[in-house]
Every structure is written in structure tokens, then in C-alpha cells.
Image 1 (tube, helix red, strand yellow):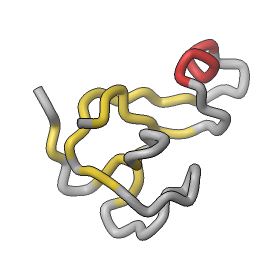
Image 2 (image 1 turned 90 degrees about the vertical axis):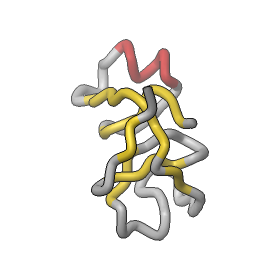
Image 3 (image 1 turned 90 degrees about the horizontal axis):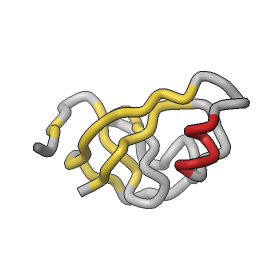
Image 4 (image 1 turned 45 degrees about the vertical axis):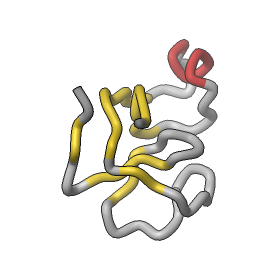
Length: 67
């Protein structure tokens, strides 16, 4: 089931979780967001295997699925 968060939104391009008030994504600079996202992955290490699987290059919070 999709989660609707009032405090956060996900970038439509890279799935990074951003503050609701953000105008551009902290990760990629894109300016299109959605409040419809499901699941959360937190990358806390540069050596994370999930980082490679998801194709992200920065530590941070990412949505598993953007709707």
C-alpha cells in the first residue's frame, strides 16, 4: 500500500527522500517530486551492497518504490 507522508516527498528521478519544503532534490537536483512512495531504505555506509544494487552514489534516504 502506498504511503502518504506529510513531512517527506520522493524525487521522481532518483527516489531520494526530500523534505516537504524542498524545491530541488538534494541528490540529483531534479525538481519533480511525488508524495506517493512506498518503503524506505537508509544507506549509511559507502561500502553498502544495497547502494550498488539501487544504483545510488550518495549516503541518504531512498524510497523503494515511487508511484
